[in-house]
Amino acid sequence: MRLDRFLAETTELTRSLAKKALHRGEVSIDGEIVKNPALQVDEASRVTWNDEPLALVGLRYLMLHKPSGVECTARRTLYPRAIDLIELPKGERLQTVGRLDVDTTGLVLLTDDGQWSHRVTSPKHRFGKVYRVTLAEPLEGEALEWAAAAFAEGVRLDGEEKPTRPAELSMREPTVAELTLFEGKYHQVKRMFAAIGHHVVALHRASIGPLALGDLPAGEWRELTADEIAAF
Image 1 (cartoon, helix red, strand yellow):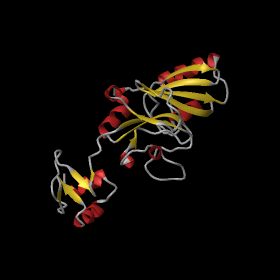
Image 2 (spheres, rainbow, N blue to C red; image 1 turned 180 degrees about the vertical axis):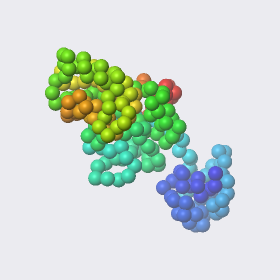
Image 3 (tube, rainbow, N blue to C red; image 1 turned 45 degrees about the horizontal axis):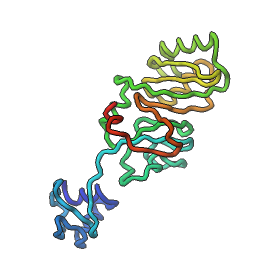
Image 4 (cartoon, rainbow, N blue to C red; image 1 turned 180 degrees about the horizontal axis):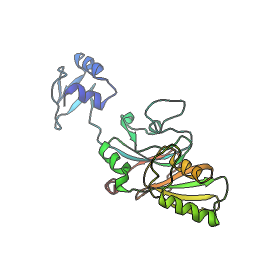
């Protein structure tokens, strides 16, 4: 890796600012000042900037309990972003693995490993996402049986040519459903319930595949363990 790129990867410097820092003699490798931005840096090199040692940031894998009012987006909007809640070096490199609506709470995964993210979100791997759905009106009796059968078969959403993939529906309370999806269409949960005549008033994602949110407080995050990463 070029030295100027290494500096950009390990500090807040841009490539152009890194070259200026090199020109000022602020960077050393193995104790010797270096000014050549094209110099190749290997894993054994000890690079310092203003006498502070630098190290490349590896791939990160995190879970976040997203509160309401937070967006899963990279661009800045009127709402805070999920990555704004993560206090890590180069946190802007993290991407959410799929998305939750701004008013939906619950489990969000973040990573800078694009291949891992694709495995988690790809429908062919069938990592079910479990949602707790609060409805405006009770869903029970024959209406529940019909809804569960419809979801298991697949529902044709407004504006969609193909029906949804089979989903699993059960009720925890008359107005609280548990829905397991194996895909991630735009506003899918709300649109599925709208298709059967029910309005969603609150939505929370409890788990993705083998990984459950557990008792992680709203707004908090933690790194995944090696076993949790490998489970996907």
